[in-house]
Image (cartoon, rainbow, N blue to C red; front, side, top):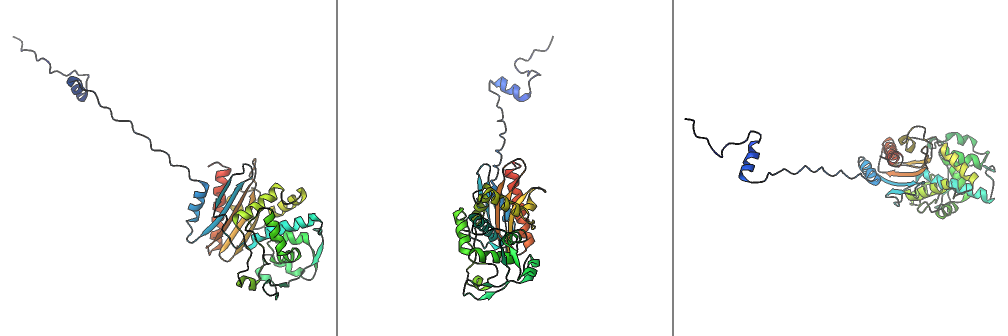
Length: 317
């Protein structure tokens, strides 16, 4: 006889053990939930990128103003904080000179006698500039001879000549320079005196600037709000001829035109620029720094901040 058949205990081979058990017990098959992809990290803002880079330099402070002249978008960091402007104060001197010439007060090719004696705003006592401390020492060979206002302006911007700057401030008047800056929306840009007025420095009577103020002044120049078309072209060409290019120009692709003015005193390094990327509207970038003892370190910081600005506005990254 055949052995009796076992009924109800066989599991079909096509079912896995767990599936068979569920099926035989009349239950449902539980499925694990699909994994949820993590949300992408939000793209940091340009201001956040600025702050992160500045934080890499112990003790560093920086004020930044960015204005895209094509879209009108602005990016800012501590942009209304006052700084000692160093040689960036030469920007409003140039603008005032060009506007005065266009008003008919004088011609840019008028000549004045170059002197190296100036009066302190504190008490009127005389002081002179030191050739060895000026970035344009060759101009001192011209003391006592006539020189045109046009050449003084060129040397003031391109070579950052302190002697040329003081000669122009004396001719224009510091109050007039500040009024012009204010009229163009450059709040916080104040010219009280010439360079190296030691008594004024000791008394705290210094020139002043904010990143926003300098940025608005440069935007007014580029838009043609500061002068006629001819005056605008002159100022742009002068700024493009700048010979000191270790800050903002070093952070943008080689060959990019940058119309700018640098500034430096002990512990403070600045640059204020109009940058002209190919195929798009220019943008204004102003970076003022302090708290960095080593100038080369400050220059690298400014260049890196320029690179971040280019990356977002031009490269779209």
